[in-house]
Image (cartoon, each protein chain N blue to C red):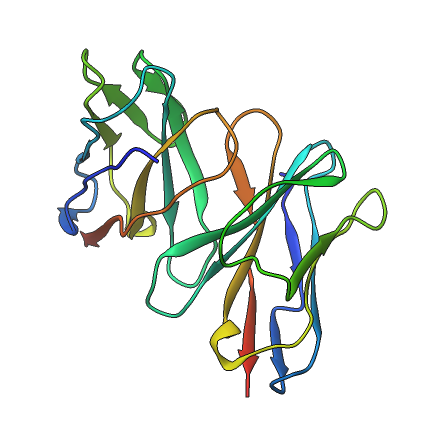
Length: 111
Length: 110
């Protein structure tokens, strides 16, 4: 069964450093998303991406965040200057017409 | 986004049916009803979605009230693997942005 894959599974970074979280969505999907989940809290929408541009973003997705689909398969989330409060699980998802399929997540720890 | 209300937690025994309710009294005529679940330490997983009619798939059934102000996710025979947080989410399309609430924590007893 096709799946969304995310790498790395765990990333530890120092405050102020840039991180790039990587995702390989399901190959025929057209819509791509990033969500995050701070430990013990709700899953929060960050951004959606369609046709090579951002289609919607939340208030969380400020200028420190960017997304890119550099080739036909990868979808990345970049955080330019990480803060302690960016520590969370980051989930990538993709969809075609029915439902969204999520990856297993990247646990980002900012120290 | 239209709001949904779910019980904080529910319990079931293995191999028994489970009915997970969701109220969405402010649903609009074009909102889809989505159900996702999140197993411990995993990403959310699509379960089922519907618009007006009841829906069945290999994982579950979705029963939608005639006035669409409530719905029920039915797991026909709960297994230990079904222990998860279940989210009822309204959305304008069958795909698209999802706004997660707190969901219902389902505990399944052996």
